[in-house]
Length: 356
Image (cartoon, rainbow, N blue to C red; front, side, top):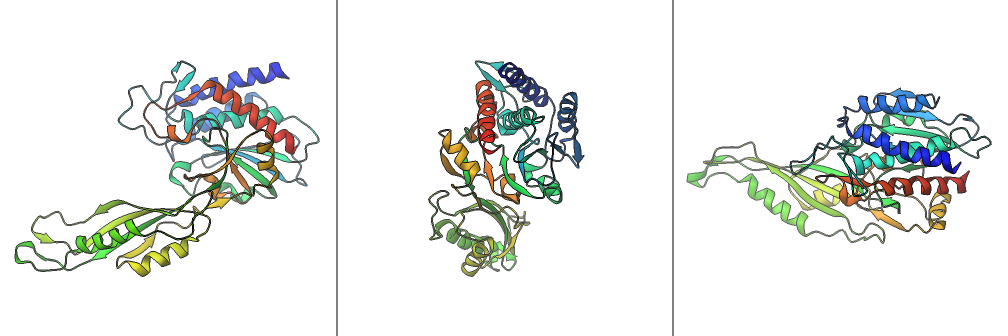
């Protein structure tokens, strides 16, 4: 079995290099999904494609059993302008594999896929295993993992593969994006007429900058509010703008609902608030859940993740766990160490063995 696992580990690296070469931006994942599907079919594993999502189940899937989901995403962000290497050329150098999506989340994707294959033909399991390569994670799109939720019944738990250094991200901040509109009154700038909507927005933005929600989480810290966009339709220098729009990025801990966040902000600012989505909520899995206990038994530590993922959309206790480091995500000349992939596969297998 060790020889077989070593072969699979090197196949994981080869597969990662193959998918790095294929642009797979959000909503454009179909070509990578095809590569993954062909790889699984070469192992005589049946696959199903739903939108740009790929799903496969263990050979002896039993509807009477609960299931464990192994999930990571196939989409990437666009490469930023600071790249010095070709983002679509999988360069291996000094033990690193460079390329767009190598760390976020290609390393997790191929590691979970190999883990699924490792267990695929095992009989008499306590749980089913479902592998999912999901789309649109980077944009929180509704045609990603959410499209598969009607298919995911009787779930025990899930592992969402994201770069966590193979530490246990048991909690995750919720993401709430607020579109805000400040109103004023138009007028001629030279005549000191009108009410400047930008100044009204500044007053609101100053409140947002300085306000601190009182409940602070041991895992996730405080709620974070950041104004990230400000704009006015007025492009003339001599007109007082009557409308100013700004966007607030809210990272929410487990102590607040989105409605509580919105109500508190709206009571204290004059701009009208419209939330873009109420879907990406804060999540937490108990430290006593068998999945977390299995990781802790292997010396892994628990923490709260500041970033969001498909964990927020899973309808069961979910652990975020994967090779690579979060701080490498979306950076120029993104990379993952080859040994991180090997170690990730080994740890995934050891964790699941404790459950099966």
